[in-house]
Length: 509
Image 1 (cartoon, one colour):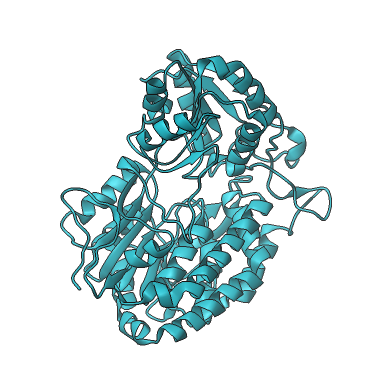
Image 2: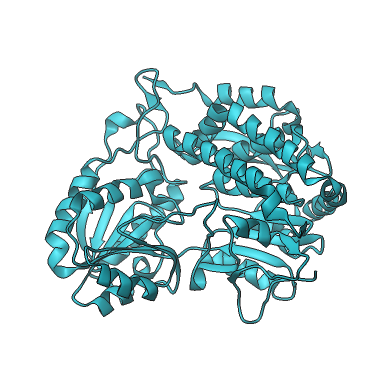
């Protein structure tokens, strides 16, 4: 029994040897701004959700230090924007190829820091690389008649530190901006730091700070030097970011949670559903586009439940790196991001049961998939509840973990109403054999992307991405919209987005 890729100290030593400039003399992860790495700040340890053991420490800034970093980052903006698009493309391409070269190291960092199974971590690296390559190929078209905003501030969640955060930063830089990010507090600091260091070595001036959102949020959102804010996270924090922007006419892209619903009506393709269910459990549903609510025509429920139970029996949960051979383990998911998240989710489940929800499925963890004696407090098996009461948090809120809720309905109006409980979501799916049902239901769903007998995902190339209602505020991204969100149009064209009535996008050129 071994750990795939070796121990954490071995991996950490590899990172230090690859990018020594990104580490302090005592081994903490440094930040970079103004063209230099800075070993300043207060050390803060990070811990692996896999077993609760310590990983790298970050040097966290206070608000004053973060303000200095923002100003130093802004000082790089003019020189970077003055480079030709061809030169920026050359440097971003070199950065992208460096990520590809160190693909496995980055994936192993994700497995240790956020508990992502290795196969899925490798896919995250690949999507980062492939996504940026698409923008490089389309750069001339996408940048025609457009100029950069300046500094783009990124505050992102921990679940996709590369394929969302680093990907966005490289595209923002390609467009001529200085991309500044705060590393996610819950996980991913080492993987983001390595990626930024590799980009810096390629001549792309990405900037990175470490610190808590409560300490740095004001500076990263409201500083005059910041031309745009990109946020990925929950609704509560998203509202705080939005409030900080109310008196600032700057661009913003705020991606927030929503309950993504999957509806079934007059449906018979059960093998298709089984595939959707198993696919949906990747990374323990710790994804903004995971489907957590299943709204089922009552007469279909027996077949739905049989299919659901069969799909759940195929899921594998365990330590992302425990292996008995040379291959990495093949898992559906590993831990949630922390033991605190598991305790919170279990409390929501117990609350729903106490209010009258019916337990339908409860999986079990297999001890053989864990290390002997390891801490498993961040792991939870799949759970499904029927008829969760409206008073329960699980009725309206996204669980962001391996918990599904089922609702039975008798009319299409009921189905649509139960699929729209969260006042906006990122994705939704209607599964039906009847094209007329699909045509009636799809336009009435309050989701940005709607699939018919198909799962929907974020997407980052030809397809735009955004949200409906409270799941999103600001410019849409994905495809050409990601470039539009962080550039001015010389023709005065405003970006497409979901803006509040009291706040319109800055468009001064």
